[in-house]
Image (cartoon, chains in turn green, red):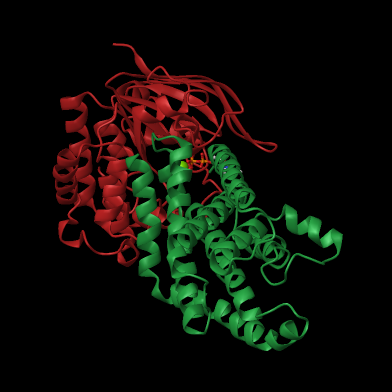
Length: 248
Length: 269
Ligand SMILES: Nc1ncnc2c1ncn2[C@@H]1O[C@H](COP(=O)(O)OP(=O)(O)OP(=O)(O)O)[C@@H](O)[C@H]1O
Ligand SMILES: [Mg+2]
């Protein structure tokens, strides 16, 4: 229990201390919000789909969470490079609690980043249907954050060097984001694309966010939450296993 | 007394290269064991297998009765380690690094506070406790790693070249503290070093490994007698030859070479 807490605390401290990283990570979502939200809005409205800014804001929040979460999970690679990983590897605590602590920390960090983007979105004109949903928003954001932190650490446990980072960005994070329905509605899209989107856990995260933010969703909310919880559990268990297999 | 470490026919291959070639040895409970050998002999590789960081290719290990491969958590509860390579979190302060360690090793809170003070005093870092590790010099980082390694009192302590890059004062403090731990708490010590006088002074038993094979075992006097030499350094050279190993490339390595040059003229006569 305390091991989980101390691993969580480490991630949180490192996050709070890297102010430039926090601000830097806000740049991209804000850009997306402005360029897509305002830029594509008129086209979207003409097509009879409603207000694109309202539609895309939850997607962008999801984006900032998944980017921060996976990036944070990749910390495992840095730890390996700088040697700290050995300290956790020989520690007499279960691999699951180390992974869980790390993942909780990464989730706190990326969830916070998502909340900052939400704040900016609201300032920029995003209007959730009811502010009473705030608890649900935070829970869903945290679930998304957990899932992708777990994914990040899991993948990083299999990689030896930071060279793999570009690979992860281009072949994991980008596809997960662009094919998730964060940017476009999942109805009336080609069935191949829909199939891919249905396999992408972020689709369910963003869908759940939209459900609580704007009251519109593609999937049943129970399915959304079920998928998020199940996939997170699988990633955590797999991640602990991969972690236990690391050799230095 | 029984043996707290038992190693039988231990082998580690990295691809085609065999780093450790079927070594067998044991360490008595409460003993101080020095594992000596030239660069690249396989010392660290062996320690990594004993401490669950590497999986052996073949052979058996018992650490406090547990197999590090199958009972890794129980084995991990039995030892503490100071690694040869850096292992601190640079983005935390000295104190935070120690606290993290204390929590991972379940040191009770009041013991931890007391122990942290004691260890920081030992390595003379008390006034730097709230500084970030990234701002520390190489030697200060090394001292902090020593402090962390001795923070909890396990049954066995592994020290992989603990004195590398340390000034003579800290080296002396370290060894007297380690000897005290061994005498008062019966903690078994397993260490490597390239400073023969340290091994001579501290170790009760010595094993010499070269090219992945153990070439001699015994007490310091035993090794001297066996080789017909008068100092452990000469015994070591007689056992391992005087050719320089081609492994010297890492920065730690250069540090060590430096240390040798510095001490070159001060060799005991
Ligand atoms: N992960 C690895 N992959 C490939 N070869 C390795 C690996 N780790 C160690 N080796 C090789 O195994 C041999 C033994 O290395 P080891 O680190 O055990 O030496 P050592 O006795 O600790 O030397 P030193 O005194 O320099 O620390 C060396 O030839 C080294 O290059
Ligand atoms: Mg070594």
